[in-house]
Length: 85
Length: 180
Image 1 (cartoon, rainbow over the protein chains, first blue to last red):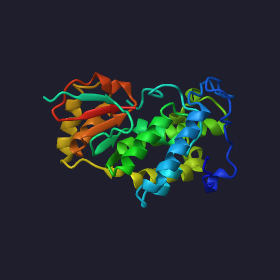
Image 2: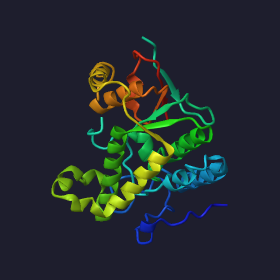
Image 3: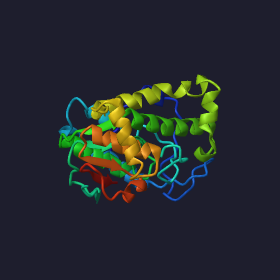
Protein backbone atom coordinates (compact mmCIF):
# COMPACT_ATOMS: atom_id res chain seq x y z
CA UNK A 1 0.00 0.00 0.00
CA UNK A 2 1.46 3.31 -1.06
CA UNK A 3 1.82 6.10 1.38
CA UNK A 4 0.39 9.48 0.55
CA UNK A 5 2.97 12.11 1.29
CA UNK A 6 1.70 15.48 2.41
CA UNK A 7 1.78 18.11 -0.30
CA UNK A 8 4.48 20.69 0.03
CA UNK A 9 3.43 24.32 -0.24
CA UNK A 10 4.57 24.76 -3.81
CA UNK A 11 3.06 21.50 -4.99
CA UNK A 12 -0.48 22.75 -5.02
CA UNK A 13 -0.21 24.36 -8.43
CA UNK A 14 2.73 22.63 -9.97
CA UNK A 15 2.54 20.86 -13.26
CA UNK A 16 3.06 17.18 -12.80
CA UNK A 17 4.54 15.06 -15.53
CA UNK A 18 2.45 11.91 -15.76
CA UNK A 19 4.20 8.86 -14.38
CA UNK A 20 2.00 6.35 -16.15
CA UNK A 21 3.60 6.07 -19.62
CA UNK A 22 5.94 3.16 -20.27
CA UNK A 23 9.52 3.82 -19.34
CA UNK A 24 10.75 4.29 -22.88
CA UNK A 25 8.25 6.90 -24.01
CA UNK A 26 9.71 10.33 -24.65
CA UNK A 27 8.22 13.01 -22.51
CA UNK A 28 6.06 15.63 -24.16
CA UNK A 29 7.96 18.68 -25.27
CA UNK A 30 11.32 17.35 -24.22
CA UNK A 31 13.89 15.53 -26.26
CA UNK A 32 14.76 13.17 -23.49
CA UNK A 33 13.64 9.71 -22.49
CA UNK A 34 12.10 8.85 -19.18
CA UNK A 35 14.25 5.98 -18.05
CA UNK A 36 12.79 5.25 -14.65
CA UNK A 37 9.70 3.06 -14.88
CA UNK A 38 6.81 4.25 -12.71
CA UNK A 39 6.93 0.94 -10.92
CA UNK A 40 10.51 1.66 -9.84
CA UNK A 41 9.48 5.07 -8.54
CA UNK A 42 6.66 3.51 -6.56
CA UNK A 43 9.00 0.81 -5.30
CA UNK A 44 11.41 3.48 -4.07
CA UNK A 45 8.56 5.13 -2.21
CA UNK A 46 7.54 1.83 -0.67
CA UNK A 47 11.11 1.19 0.36
CA UNK A 48 11.24 4.60 2.00
CA UNK A 49 8.00 3.90 3.81
CA UNK A 50 9.35 0.56 5.02
CA UNK A 51 12.47 2.07 6.57
CA UNK A 52 10.81 5.21 7.91
CA UNK A 53 10.40 3.85 11.45
CA UNK A 54 14.09 2.96 11.55
CA UNK A 55 15.34 6.32 10.33
CA UNK A 56 16.79 8.67 12.93
CA UNK A 57 13.94 10.86 14.10
CA UNK A 58 15.82 14.08 13.42
CA UNK A 59 16.28 13.32 9.73
CA UNK A 60 13.17 11.26 8.99
CA UNK A 61 11.02 13.95 7.40
CA UNK A 62 13.92 15.43 5.44
CA UNK A 63 14.67 12.02 3.96
CA UNK A 64 11.10 11.11 3.18
CA UNK A 65 10.10 14.47 1.74
CA UNK A 66 13.44 15.11 0.07
CA UNK A 67 13.48 11.85 -1.87
CA UNK A 68 11.97 12.56 -5.26
CA UNK A 69 11.22 16.17 -4.47
CA UNK A 70 11.56 17.02 -8.17
CA UNK A 71 9.98 15.26 -11.09
CA UNK A 72 11.32 16.93 -14.19
CA UNK A 73 12.78 14.64 -16.85
CA UNK A 74 16.51 14.16 -16.49
CA UNK A 75 18.79 13.64 -19.48
CA UNK A 76 19.99 10.11 -19.74
CA UNK A 77 23.66 10.64 -19.02
CA UNK A 78 26.04 11.27 -16.17
CA UNK A 79 26.92 14.78 -17.12
CA UNK A 80 24.57 17.43 -18.43
CA UNK A 81 26.98 19.60 -20.30
CA UNK A 82 30.52 18.97 -19.24
CA UNK A 83 30.49 22.02 -16.99
CA UNK A 84 30.24 19.91 -13.91
CA UNK A 85 33.36 17.84 -14.46
CA UNK B 1 50.11 4.36 -2.94
CA UNK B 2 47.05 2.37 -1.93
CA UNK B 3 44.89 1.07 -4.74
CA UNK B 4 41.44 2.52 -5.17
CA UNK B 5 38.85 -0.15 -4.48
CA UNK B 6 35.84 0.04 -6.74
CA UNK B 7 32.47 -1.36 -5.79
CA UNK B 8 29.02 -1.34 -7.31
CA UNK B 9 26.60 -0.70 -4.51
CA UNK B 10 24.55 -3.72 -3.56
CA UNK B 11 22.00 -3.28 -0.81
CA UNK B 12 22.17 -4.06 2.06
CA UNK B 13 25.98 -4.04 2.12
CA UNK B 14 27.11 -0.69 3.42
CA UNK B 15 29.95 1.54 2.32
CA UNK B 16 32.42 2.27 5.12
CA UNK B 17 31.74 5.67 6.57
CA UNK B 18 32.09 8.52 6.38
CA UNK B 19 30.81 8.42 2.81
CA UNK B 20 31.39 11.44 0.60
CA UNK B 21 28.54 12.00 -1.87
CA UNK B 22 29.13 13.86 -5.10
CA UNK B 23 26.36 15.84 -6.74
CA UNK B 24 25.21 12.94 -8.90
CA UNK B 25 23.89 11.21 -5.79
CA UNK B 26 22.15 14.36 -4.56
CA UNK B 27 20.45 14.88 -7.91
CA UNK B 28 19.50 11.22 -8.25
CA UNK B 29 18.02 11.17 -4.76
CA UNK B 30 15.87 14.24 -5.33
CA UNK B 31 14.76 13.63 -8.92
CA UNK B 32 12.30 10.85 -9.65
CA UNK B 33 13.13 10.79 -13.36
CA UNK B 34 16.84 10.31 -12.78
CA UNK B 35 17.68 6.78 -13.80
CA UNK B 36 19.55 6.28 -10.55
CA UNK B 37 16.69 7.55 -8.39
CA UNK B 38 15.64 4.16 -6.98
CA UNK B 39 19.20 3.16 -6.18
CA UNK B 40 20.06 6.54 -4.68
CA UNK B 41 17.01 6.35 -2.43
CA UNK B 42 18.08 2.90 -1.28
CA UNK B 43 21.69 3.94 -0.80
CA UNK B 44 20.84 6.98 1.30
CA UNK B 45 18.12 5.12 3.19
CA UNK B 46 20.29 2.11 4.02
CA UNK B 47 23.11 4.30 5.31
CA UNK B 48 20.80 6.52 7.31
CA UNK B 49 19.23 3.51 9.01
CA UNK B 50 22.73 2.25 9.88
CA UNK B 51 23.77 5.74 11.11
CA UNK B 52 26.65 5.90 8.63
CA UNK B 53 27.74 9.48 8.17
CA UNK B 54 27.06 10.86 4.69
CA UNK B 55 29.08 13.90 3.67
CA UNK B 56 28.24 16.63 1.19
CA UNK B 57 30.21 19.70 0.20
CA UNK B 58 29.50 23.20 -1.01
CA UNK B 59 30.89 22.12 -4.37
CA UNK B 60 28.45 19.23 -4.49
CA UNK B 61 25.55 21.48 -3.54
CA UNK B 62 26.62 23.99 -6.18
CA UNK B 63 26.58 21.34 -8.88
CA UNK B 64 23.34 19.81 -7.66
CA UNK B 65 21.60 23.19 -7.51
CA UNK B 66 22.70 23.93 -11.04
CA UNK B 67 21.27 20.71 -12.36
CA UNK B 68 18.06 21.02 -10.37
CA UNK B 69 17.60 24.64 -11.40
CA UNK B 70 18.19 23.75 -15.00
CA UNK B 71 15.53 21.07 -14.88
CA UNK B 72 13.04 23.33 -13.19
CA UNK B 73 13.54 26.24 -15.56
CA UNK B 74 13.35 23.95 -18.58
CA UNK B 75 10.13 22.42 -17.35
CA UNK B 76 8.58 25.77 -16.56
CA UNK B 77 9.33 26.88 -20.13
CA UNK B 78 8.35 23.52 -21.60
CA UNK B 79 11.61 23.11 -23.47
CA UNK B 80 14.07 20.21 -23.46
CA UNK B 81 16.73 20.49 -20.80
CA UNK B 82 19.49 20.12 -23.33
CA UNK B 83 18.23 23.12 -25.25
CA UNK B 84 18.29 25.39 -22.22
CA UNK B 85 21.32 27.64 -21.80
CA UNK B 86 20.78 28.40 -18.13
CA UNK B 87 24.12 30.15 -17.82
CA UNK B 88 23.12 32.74 -20.36
CA UNK B 89 19.66 33.15 -18.86
CA UNK B 90 20.77 33.72 -15.29
CA UNK B 91 23.26 36.36 -16.39
CA UNK B 92 20.30 38.51 -17.36
CA UNK B 93 19.11 38.74 -13.79
CA UNK B 94 17.79 36.89 -10.78
CA UNK B 95 14.24 36.77 -12.10
CA UNK B 96 14.93 33.54 -13.96
CA UNK B 97 15.60 31.58 -10.80
CA UNK B 98 13.42 33.57 -8.42
CA UNK B 99 10.26 31.47 -8.87
CA UNK B 100 12.24 28.31 -8.13
CA UNK B 101 14.29 29.50 -5.18
CA UNK B 102 11.85 28.27 -2.50
CA UNK B 103 12.04 24.73 -3.87
CA UNK B 104 15.80 24.86 -4.27
CA UNK B 105 16.20 26.19 -0.76
CA UNK B 106 13.95 23.44 0.55
CA UNK B 107 16.00 20.80 -1.26
CA UNK B 108 19.24 22.12 0.20
CA UNK B 109 17.70 22.28 3.67
CA UNK B 110 16.65 18.65 3.39
CA UNK B 111 20.12 17.61 2.19
CA UNK B 112 21.83 19.41 5.04
CA UNK B 113 19.52 17.67 7.49
CA UNK B 114 20.38 14.11 6.52
CA UNK B 115 23.96 14.69 5.42
CA UNK B 116 26.88 16.49 7.01
CA UNK B 117 28.01 19.58 5.13
CA UNK B 118 31.80 19.30 5.30
CA UNK B 119 34.75 21.53 4.50
CA UNK B 120 38.44 20.63 4.24
CA UNK B 121 40.14 20.25 7.59
CA UNK B 122 43.46 21.31 6.10
CA UNK B 123 44.69 24.79 5.31
CA UNK B 124 43.38 26.33 2.08
CA UNK B 125 46.79 26.10 0.44
CA UNK B 126 47.18 22.43 1.38
CA UNK B 127 43.76 21.75 -0.02
CA UNK B 128 44.57 23.50 -3.28
CA UNK B 129 47.77 21.47 -3.55
CA UNK B 130 45.78 18.28 -3.16
CA UNK B 131 43.23 19.45 -5.70
CA UNK B 132 45.92 20.10 -8.28
CA UNK B 133 47.61 16.79 -7.44
CA UNK B 134 44.38 14.95 -8.11
CA UNK B 135 44.36 16.31 -11.63
CA UNK B 136 47.05 13.71 -12.26
CA UNK B 137 44.52 11.05 -11.36
CA UNK B 138 41.35 12.30 -13.02
CA UNK B 139 40.72 14.78 -15.79
CA UNK B 140 37.88 17.00 -14.64
CA UNK B 141 38.58 20.03 -12.47
CA UNK B 142 35.49 19.43 -10.36
CA UNK B 143 36.06 15.68 -10.18
CA UNK B 144 39.58 16.32 -8.90
CA UNK B 145 38.27 18.76 -6.34
CA UNK B 146 35.70 16.25 -5.10
CA UNK B 147 38.51 13.76 -4.54
CA UNK B 148 40.55 16.36 -2.66
CA UNK B 149 37.52 17.13 -0.53
CA UNK B 150 37.04 13.46 0.25
CA UNK B 151 40.68 13.25 1.27
CA UNK B 152 40.57 16.29 3.52
CA UNK B 153 37.26 15.50 5.19
CA UNK B 154 38.36 12.01 6.21
CA UNK B 155 35.93 10.13 4.02
CA UNK B 156 36.57 6.42 3.68
CA UNK B 157 34.16 5.94 0.79
CA UNK B 158 33.08 7.99 -2.19
CA UNK B 159 29.66 7.49 -3.77
CA UNK B 160 28.84 8.57 -7.30
CA UNK B 161 27.04 7.61 -10.49
CA UNK B 162 29.78 9.22 -12.58
CA UNK B 163 31.70 6.74 -14.71
CA UNK B 164 34.72 9.05 -14.85
CA UNK B 165 35.84 7.89 -11.42
CA UNK B 166 36.28 4.35 -12.70
CA UNK B 167 39.61 5.41 -14.21
CA UNK B 168 41.11 5.81 -10.75
CA UNK B 169 43.65 3.13 -9.92
CA UNK B 170 45.65 4.51 -7.00
CA UNK B 171 45.48 7.49 -4.67
CA UNK B 172 47.78 8.67 -1.89
CA UNK B 173 44.97 7.94 0.57
CA UNK B 174 42.71 4.94 1.04
CA UNK B 175 39.35 5.31 -0.64
CA UNK B 176 36.59 2.99 -1.77
CA UNK B 177 34.58 4.25 -4.73
CA UNK B 178 30.97 3.10 -4.77
CA UNK B 179 29.09 3.45 -8.00
CA UNK B 180 25.33 3.18 -7.91
